[in-house]
Picture (tube, rainbow, N blue to C red):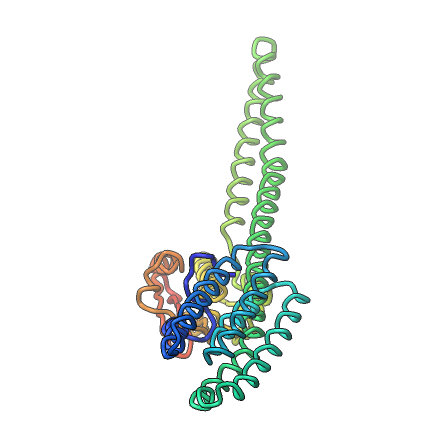
Length: 370
């Protein structure tokens, strides 16, 4: 729901200029009346309507329904006495922002019935005025029928998207925690035991240094060998952390797109051959960044990944059917494109971005790295 200080409704399918017209028009309908009393009453009704309308956005509980009831009464009065029916569109928008399903349905039915009834009586009371604006009245009734459901479904979808984003963020945090725990276990299993052994052998060598120098040499050799073994294990562990296989990343990509409800299609074999592991890791990281951009920024419904390996190069293409990417967005740090280019340049690769019916990212590396 919008904030109280917003003058005009947002995301209704109508521009702000249309809402400005709906705010100015009631004064035209009022000032064409010849009676000074009617003009004063009309202006008071307009001020009261917009005051109540804006306050209804910051009210909670039953006071919201009281405000809507006052606005409905003013809308009926403006319709019958001045022939101005367009306050009903403001009400239709506000009703669409009510999240309580029972309250939404109740206010929707009441508003629809009162609007149609007021317009029907208006044709008998001010038939000339109503017949001159008949096409606009028909459009207004259609808006009263469709606008609340449009706003209700849009707000519901935005709420679900927010919950999905929060869930994805929580999953990412849990994955980081799990990775930290795994690293802690690996460090304990590798370094912990080796360092404990080195400590015990150092203490033993210190005690034997005067008693048995030959045994001390043996213990020092064991300490040296244990330290080398621990160093090799740490190097292997770090190497395994940095290594990212393309096939494994494809599985992660599929899970990410599935969680975002984006159709995923892959063409080509992710099990590449004759490709150095460093190159495969760089391409895997670029693929992850490209798909992350699709999920976060593209508003796409489908994503197609192409993997093509030839004798001279390995090519990966990520295409979506979203809103596309502008030159300004391409240079933004939020998309991580700078990092992708740096990774690819490290292995003599290239990145190309095309925006046509979505966004197509193509990155490739030669098979021979200089």
